[in-house]
Length: 463
Image (cartoon, rainbow, N blue to C red; front, side, top):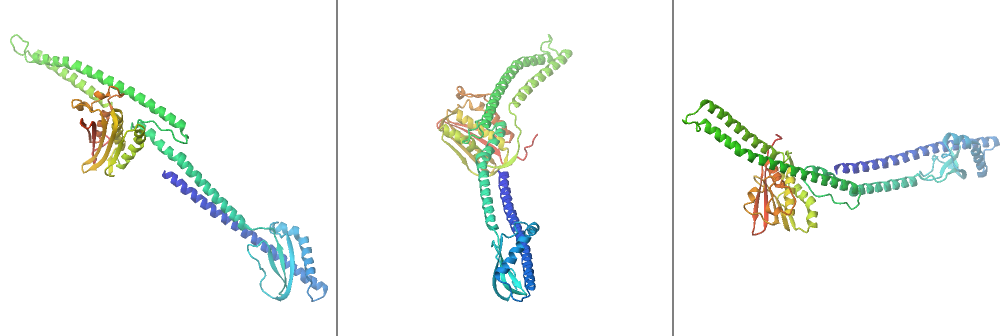
């Protein structure tokens, strides 16, 4: 979601930049047109004043002309020069109408008496340095402020619409997909077994359907692999027990021969003793080979390599909430996920989540629905996680075998499973230099699993 926050900040900055650039551009265009208009009007007024002076000289009179006569000069000039001035300064700068207004002559030094936001322009008309009237240039409405206001409102509206769309996409698409995107990774690490729930907006219907199909396919294949592994282990165990007895007898006979037990005089035959030693050594080699095969077969059941990193203990509670809260509510199973201390854990989060997932799944499958309690705590020497569930309790004779591979208790006759989950969980815990312990309380009808993970497993390596 950090990338999404950067996207929002980028969008805001782009709109702010667009806002500043558009306003600066409008201001620049307005200023340029105003300057062009002022230059044009200045030329017109100077030309009119020159025409006025020429008219006075041609009439041979020092008296000023009347207002109507000056207006005639104005109209004649504008008519004759319209095309040339429009071509030079542009039609926008050229006024629609020019009116002359006379006034009493007087001294003055102000030539332009206009307001910047006015549509009309008023210029002083002078004769021999005295203001004798005003020339009014009428324009159609050219108010840039209204245009600027409309532009700014449009930009703000577009900004809020864009932010609204981004928020909608974030809430309806990106945020749900961010949660969905972690599912394949968790599925590959065997952290979860539940299917993805259908989202309300149904935008990811086909994706969720495909992922759930993949989950079913992976679970079926894993079930088949577990069955094959169990058959493989059963076969090896049978072979081992079948071989051990005759090999032990062979070794016994070899030892008897090497001691001269079968000689009539009871003396050791050196040549027979030498052969007997070789037979005994080969018998030991066969026994060692069988033991090694069984150990290798057991080791291939769990494929796990620790990846040590730092994370908060609260992240494990969040994992349990996200993966099991809705499921337990639907099954009407009371539950409590208790966080005793939000410490920083230096361990393999994925591995611990796999352990918790297995214990939670077992608590749901083999429990009676009376309740599940999970506690996450830190103590001086490490981290302790407790998973309790109400249900049928295994007998004391069964508890020593509960972590054996492919072993299933007496309470699992009507429940599916391979008997590998607790074996895998303990292997992971021991790979993290911890362990899992089991307790059975018949009086309370409760099974309890205690997980211990050391606080600082610095000795853990990838070897």
